[in-house]
Image (cartoon, rainbow, N blue to C red; front, side, top):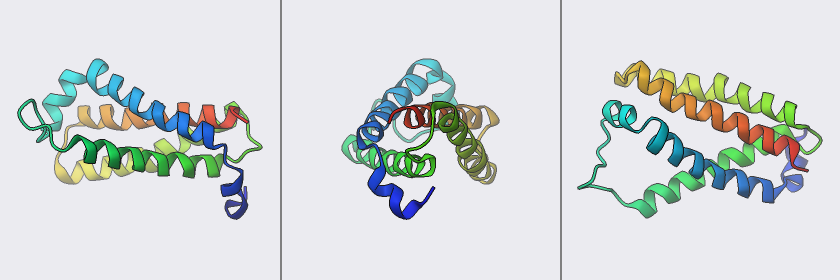
Length: 137
């Protein structure tokens, strides 16, 4: 992998599809699978009375996921396959994402259950993202 040349070789359609998938999976993960536990443990300032600024929240989340998916696509490269992409996604999510979330949660006193929900989302998402990016050439 050569990061200097791989930017021009990114499959931008795959990146866009995976970025959209991040929203679909996030909605399912946090609204269907773990809604009650996530709401109980996250103590989010957003609720039915205070929804925040949805354009800002979803816009910045979309940009953040897009940047992360582009970086994952660059890491995986365009000569990869589904299994290799899955492995990259799993390693990145376990080694960098989950551990970073874990350290932050330790210092802010978040529950282990919330860690499993939030880090678990990224482990599943980046693994699937890697699989798709590795397979889609």
